[in-house]
Length: 148
Image (cartoon, rainbow, N blue to C red):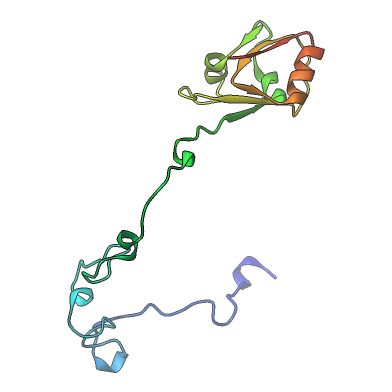
């Protein structure tokens, strides 16, 4: 089989629906929009939850309580193996150093260091959180894990 011999399987290609081209085409007159009304007009769109003027369900139901999920700050993950790209001269690692080397974005609030990969030199790492294996590997290499 050659590239110029490739063909689509039967039924893979559909004709484009042509609306408003006469009754014989099956989509003439109202062009598949039904009769009159708001949904038949061009540019019409009814927002989600709109029930035609009836009091919508989301307004009928009581809204009580508070959920912390909307305000949760998910930490950005950096693995120990990722720190190998840092210059050999660097001994202290924080969010600014990680941002300069493209490991995190500049405006990240929380960074969590995970223990995937190996650390071959002593580094003084400052982050919001450390996994247990990351902390153990950092201390084994002669470095220090500072929560801050």
